[in-house]
Length: 133
Image 1: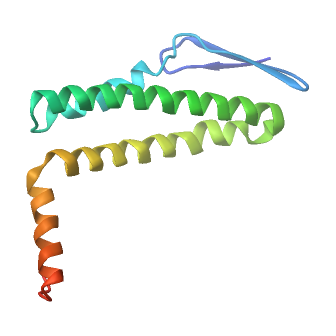
Image 2 (image 1 turned 180 degrees about the vertical axis):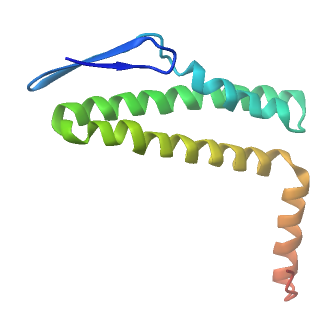
């Protein structure tokens, strides 16, 4: 049995019995990850209805991301246990950062009218043969 400690100090245990793997996690539900992502709409300028939708999308998105991560790590632990630590410590951390940046970019694009109007102006100018830098 391999013992790991979570950031909050709660132990997580991983037991390997070929061809099965059992994973028990204590006190990790994705809420710790969802809090900063859900706070993003509150920090940026938007209508309150847009903020509520943004928070809901963030919470659901983080939970779906966490479920996909757990399923992938479970299957990886069963079929390729040597790669488990690399995927757990590097791959999914990078994927979480990229997902957060994509969420922020999409949020800014959808809620900031200046970004949308600049994109429309560039598109219109390009259609008229004017090149904007």
